[in-house]
Length: 501
RNA sequence: GGGCCGCUAGCUCAACUGGUAGAGCAGCUGACUCUUAAUCAGCGGGUUGUAGGUUCGAGUCCUACGCGGCUCACCA
Image (cartoon, rainbow, N blue to C red):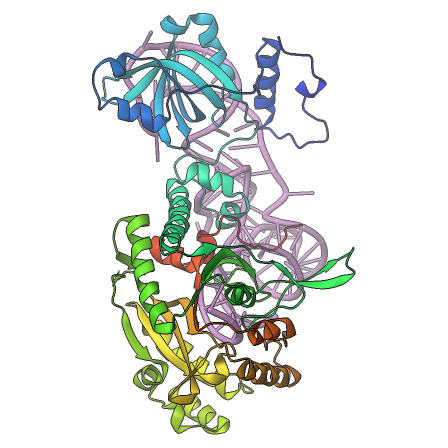
């Protein structure tokens, strides 16, 4: 028996349009017939996929009664016979309701079912005359009534805004969207498997930080009432993970959200997922080798091959990847040798001549970055390590032994997008102190993205940090690459959008 | 933030140089025991993103705003 419940009637202050009204009426009618439209559980013996698979193993299996549950996504009434498709997390399967099996009374309850409703059914698998594997329903249970309609069935949901705002509809209707996010989960799983197998320890460090650092970005600010203090959402995990290396964890990594208060684009979401790893006694060459192996492994695990297509380019992620210095790549693609222009104004003129459009007040380091972004990045389709960056761009990277103006750093590019950033970590506290001072000067000069002076971190380094190779890899971009999605919004379930009031 | 494009029924889209806003799907009523974009007959469904303006008359032209997409700038 269903307990009498006043909410059987639709709340009067909830919207109820012409499409919802008949569904609410059906819900009330079912309740009056003693049917709970929102029961508690349903014991399944099979998923849709499992039932379909069972057809391939003939014998007693096929005769067995199966119990499965899902959302009604299509329905075709034909008098005393009705076909429908049931969709669950594994896929969809056809089910058939027959009057002569169910009896006219139970069959008549079908008229109160709608597309979008969840039902559980028990029945016998059979194959229709047209060859479709189907379950003949012997017993059906309403599991959840849907009072709003599903999106249109042929074109699905095409409105991009609605797809992002109501991702659940996108997932119900667009199979490829669901697959992309399942793939994303496999990517993260494979990354963990790879790192764990190499002896890395997964850790979690603070998201709320009194000082932010480890990357060049503007932060989000928040406030803790009890502590009466301003806090920042982290822009990177770097400085905490290196404290852990000081603490004796030789190999650590963290997979988590970073937050950067920047503009939105097809490549940028204000919160994004980053993997950072740190390995003691390794340098950036060791990290390079690990990076190419890891990406190839992830691709193999997630999509079954290292050969991918991105923006109609055939790309092979199998190691070894090309290694080239930043200097030679900029010379190759922009025709500018930045070492020949050590003065800022000189390099500015050279960049303009080459066809770049740098910001008028760009520093020397920003100009180098601009040359990289404009001329080199878009051309790096096959996996490429760009190595050896100017010191000024990298306040936490160790200098080359043979060249004190250059640091041991690489960025990995695939398909024209940057997927990783790594360096031999700076562990000399005297040098780190100088770098922080330099960042302070840049901040004073108006660079909002310059590092804050992190005294605690410096004290940690003064206790001694072993030589360490660090890596940061953007998970969202890696998934974009592996799924051939060109907008980061298509690999983030709920991307940031403007509020809609 | 700049530029360009878009916003019409629940969904997907039409509507010529300004002249009564339509179709398919979804919904409702009926027929139908092998359909799968089921089919057939009938019915209902709209403040054309919002607010102004021009005009006898605006979905259409103008202005502002909102939201989205692409792109540039910034960034990973």
